[in-house]
Amino acid sequence: MILGAGYLGAALAELALQEGHDVTLADNWYATERQQLEPLHADGARIEAVDIRQRHDIDRVLAGPPDRVYLTAAQASRPLSERDPDYTEQTNLTGARRVAEAVSATGGLPLV
Image (cartoon, rainbow, N blue to C red; front, side):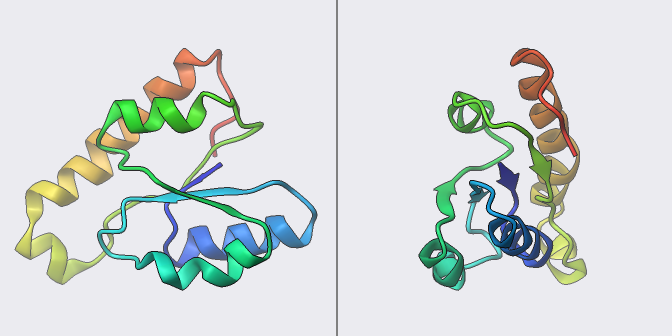
């Protein structure tokens, strides 16, 4: 499970797929466009809409549960952070906490 399908998440998904792992790549599509991931989807990645600011979204994709969770979701754009500081805070702080809490509630999946 890779939460965050931007540059880092997509690169991690590509490497994992090349190594033969099952990959679920999730994003809220705020700064990344879903169609950018079509090559990864064609290679076997499952693509999900997940907003890490929403605990029910996280719980839904962890229900499997996956073997491991990679958290690469973050709002990293300076112009966007200036334009929408609340979104940045909710994603980078609250979202990361919600992911950690949800992972802990599953019994402690490895979280990277």
